[in-house]
Amino acid sequence: MKNNVLYLIKSKLNIKVKGHNIERFIKRLKNNNIEILDIKYISNDEINIKIYKYDYDKIIKIKTIYEIEIIDYYGIIRTKNNLLNNRYIIMFILISLVSLYLVTSLIFEIDVVTNDSKMEKNLLEELEQLGIKKYKFKKNYIRLQEIKNKLLNNHKDELEWLEIDSIGTKYIIRYESRIKNDIKDKTPLRNIIAKKDCVIRDMNISSGQIIKEVDSYVKKGDVIVSGYITLNENIKDTVSSIGTIYGETWYKVTITYPYKYKEVKETGNSKEVLVIKFLGKDIELFNFNKYNSKNIKEKTILKNNLLPIKFVKQKQLETIIIDENNTDEELINKAVNLAKNKMEENLDESEYVKDYKILNKTKHSDSITLNIFFNVVEDVTEYQEIEEYKEELEEDKEN
Image (tube, rainbow, N blue to C red; front, top):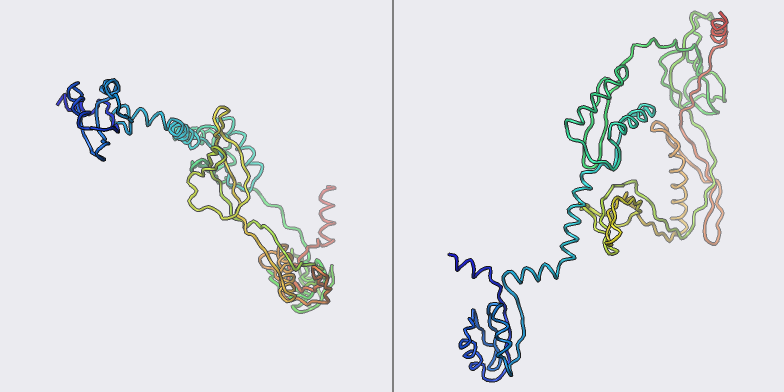
């Protein structure tokens, strides 16, 4: 068993021998106690033989007219040569693994899920004081629970519960505000008036007396729903009018669209990717669905001044390339759609473009200019406090 182990770990060489009378050369090896582990005849004047490395010097001394060339290594020396030949790759892999471990143990983003900017600012400041901030190592479960309890204790009157979730390289802080039984101010007595000139197309009224009906034309400032509740022309009560009025309004838009149009446009899709930059190449980690076209915002995380390698965090924004060469008909349709889309960007979900009409068009050498009239149904609700209520408020302030 011991001899077999020694046989496996001893370094061996595979050498090529060229020359006349190969058999004589083999005989000389045997006479000098050089063990031939394997032999392969290539031709009458050439063989490949496997020997122990320590016998190589003996062969060199007795080779005389024969040409000797090492063609392969075995055993420990082969492993050593492979390590030396690939030392930079091995070094890069080791550095990459260590760096990857460090990177995945760091926090790159902290997100407080809230619409309360003041509470978000307070929580982020306190988290930073407690050791949770960007580019710091993750905390273990016990430490996170301690931090959570401390935050809840600091905001007893504001927070019902709070959780700190660790997802990848990101902390997400969720909380629920404590419900306060505050006495709400009394809603002021008011009318609903038209915010602009329009034709009323829809109404959703829960309080107040309707003065104007659907499909009626109103001017800016006209009362549509009154806070005065009347019966037989006598005021029986005064309330706060509550509801929403949708009116058809009108806009004139001028837009110019080119025959030839090229644009790189962001789709709205984005993702954050960890990247190893090595010798001018980007190696993206765990990015299995790459964007065909993208804009990149890059931030360096780790770099080595001695080696051409660094880790960066990229925010990749997916883009599409629009390249058009339009006919007159295509150009007009696209100009109208572009103007319509721009109108809709300023509308809520319940508002919409009802119709449009092209008033005139001017053709240029490289573009067309359109004047378009749009009919838009939008929220025209505006509130007007009733004068008597204003006077009551002023009296209360004076008293």
